[in-house]
Amino acid sequence: MKEQAVHTLTQLPHNTDKRVKEVKVLMYHRLMDAAEARVNNHWTAVEQSSFREHLKVLEAFNYTAITFNDLKLHFQNEIELPKKPVIITFDDAYKDFYEIGYPLLKEFGMRAVIFALGDRSITENAWDDPSEIDRVPLMSDKELVQLHNEGFEIGAHSCTHPKLTEISLEEAEREIFESKESLERLLGSEVTSFCYPYGLENKAIQQIVKDAGFSFGCTVYSGPTSFGESLFNIHRITIKNNMGALGFALRVLTPLDAVEVNGSKLKKRIFSVG
Image (cartoon, rainbow, N blue to C red; front, side, top):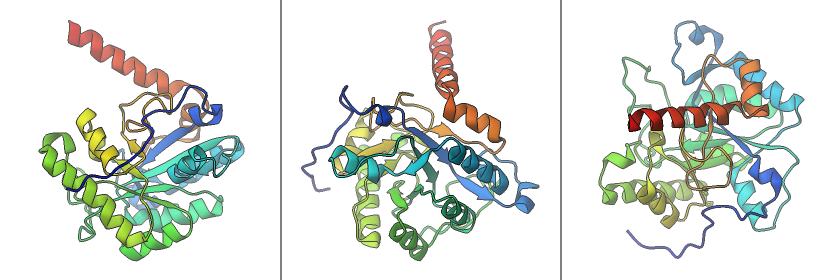
């Protein structure tokens, strides 16, 4: 794998704009209509009406949806950020995002970051246990390009969705580097952000993501709850299928998510000592 000379921030300077340090990053997976919601209760599948309520909360409290590309441009002093930025991310690039999420986000004048696989021959979520999660289609090349052209960000989610910490570093390097190269060929544009499948990463995997030329790496539950302390271990607020408007608002508007995450980390530390 070829080496790249990359000069990338790993964390934000202490004098960074307060708006950046307060950025909330939201993590979604699937969206579903009311009919499917009656038979599918997996935590990753958020019902259409709930997603609309979430967007209403963001709109009511004057949040503006930005992308990681916007942050990079801000770091380069090329654009100013809005007063209350939020980043909405979707893992896996399911087709239901195109059918449900995309129209709703357009209705509210918002954008999102979609993390797609670099192996474009994979057309459904083959990595999931079919006894727990149904096989459903992923977005096509044409749909990803359309979203990219309309200001949505397409990030990389590896090539084939492996657990990067459970394969060799050589295989992980291939998964990470080639996912960036594949998506950049498809989009004709730089791919800035990477999402670790299953949220699994470590220092070695983070370094590969940085070496590949990414500027941001997103996890799931791990990472500092204050944005910018580690740009390659970015914590995201997990949005689950049973989260209504109130639960969503509490996680976006208050420190509840940080309290829950840090409390869970403390509990694990205490019991591991015992």
